[in-house]
Amino acid sequence: MKKSIHVIALFCITAMPCLLGQAAAQAPHPDTVKAGIYVTSIHDIDFKQNQYTADVWLWLKYKNRAFDFVQNLEIPQAKTVTKSFSTIDSTNGRYYLLMKLQCVMSDTWKINNFPFDRQTLRFSLENSQFDRHALVFVPDTLGKHYDPRFTLRGWNIDSFIVASGIKQYETNFGDETLGKPHTEYSAFRVRAVIKRDASDLFWKMFLGMYVAFLISYVCFYIHSDNIDSRFGLSVGSLFAAIGNKYIVDASLPESTSFTLVDLLHGLTLFFIFLIITSSAWSLYLTKQNKIKQANKFDVVAAQVLLLIYIALNTYFILNAKNA
Image (cartoon, rainbow, N blue to C red; front, side):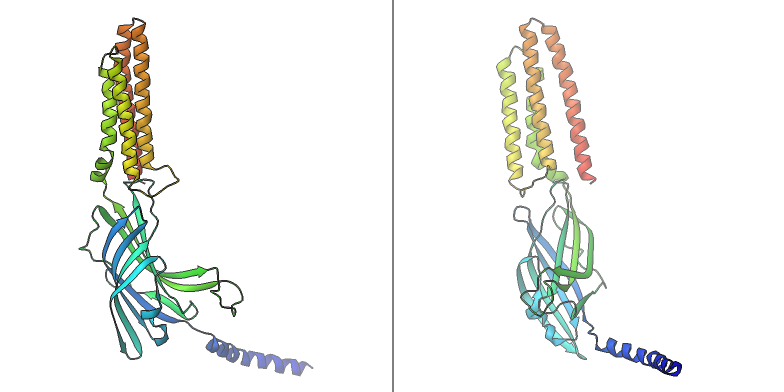
């Protein structure tokens, strides 16, 4: 009995490596696809339509002819893809595909700190017919990935990263042979972080708002007896600030969060309201024959409101720029 146990144990020790090696040989190994990209232009950044346009050179190196990236190339976030050029060569059983693409990409924009915003542009590609068990991407990191001579007007490129990853889909795309509605595809990903150079744009968009505030602020230097002039300027500046906000909002997508644009316009409207309230109090003092008190109140209120308004604007703007 002991001899039989020893024989069985010896057989397991000698046979196990062979069995494991045979199982490993039978296990499927996905083919690698070396992918590289060179961006020649990014333009037509459209905040309202949540899109931008990118011109890129894309190259792929692989051995399996069935991958056929000319037909099976999938760019999930693209609205439209135009192939203006493509060529494929075969050397020593390896295929080299080079193509020029123009893609209108769909993306979401972060406008909380607009116009001092930082945006992330994403570009990814997959093979629509082969999942990660048959194909995996390996990024070609040699050299630069974008033309340093092209510049986005009003933007600076902070970083540009290429990498590979796995895209998961919670569906089997109608394939009943899969045990559960879950598939995974290898993805080649590009992420570019850009930051807006917004000094000129800021004044272009908010100059009308600040002029409206200053027009209202002038009321403090009009004698409180001229009630029509003081209230007329304040109410006019109030509508001017509201109109400026509608103009700015027209160029931005809808947002449920409170943005810098909303904050600065809301702050301006609130301070115009305080100026109108101060004018009403000054008029009340004048009607009580307290002319000196009314004049003193106008001087003090003018300095205090102006300093607080400037301080709050500076704080919120610097906070947005450094975010």
